[in-house]
Amino acid sequence: MRKVLFVAAILAALVSGCASAEAGELTGTLAKVKELGYITIGHREASVPFSYVDDKRQPVGFAIDICGKIVDAVKRELEMEKLEVRYQLVTASTRIPLLANGTIDLECGNTTNNAERQKQVWYTNTHFLTASRFLSRVDANVRLIADLKGKTVVSPAGSTNIRQALEFNNRLHLGMTIVPAQDQGEAFLMVETGRAAAFVQDDIVLAGLIAIAKDPKAYMISEDAFSKPEPYGIMLRKDDVAFKALADAATSALYKSAEGRALYAKWFTQAIPPKNVNLNIPMSEAMKRAFEKPTDSPDPAAY
Image 1 (cartoon, rainbow, N blue to C red):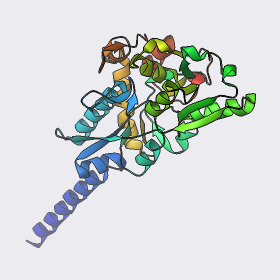
Image 2: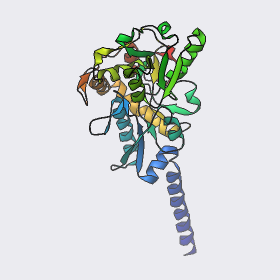
Image 3: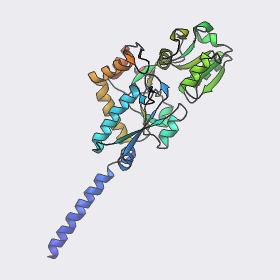
């Protein structure tokens, strides 16, 4: 009898140990989501076509759809069919702090992946390549970076773009007054109302804002650029190895598939809400390579 009890105790300990090990496998975001029963996606107000709100105030966009694929992978990994998805509005200046403090779990928008930011956050595979340019009114006759000398320029606070504008201002001695805006909507309004001569931002974002403007023909995007084409990536918390591996696998599978190319076409070469405008931006050769061989590299030369 004593021997039977001893064996039973050993079996119970083994079962308990296995259960503890299994429970201990989840770390970081995956453990947080499993415990709370929901995942929170950070989205933007007006980053067309990546992440913005439609006429029903619902988050939509290319990056939002990509994040949906990551969420599907989380559901499978955690075996949670009814995982709740919550949305949190973020701006250029709040997106990294809200990710770091756990308010959001993914930042789904048009955030540039660069070496400096990788000291604070991680990214999954690149979903777009863009260069930093400026938008101006056609009647302002401001076409080159040199034309901005002595003028007021606006760019979102906390963005890569405002840093690049400051660098050009100092290096070329342009004497620009550079004003930080809360978001893209405020920056565009400043140009629209004549309070700024130009709005420095990623060219694809500028194209999206022009497409939904009251008079799209009233605006132009500079040929001059403040940067080489740089990668966008979905942000996640730094050092979250398991969650990044899951996000990388989900995005890599998507980008390599026909579904990935169809998703790109949906947002860049077809009419999109809320005004059914077509940005008409076919996939570039660099983007085709980035989708064929997914990477999270912050180096523009890698593309």
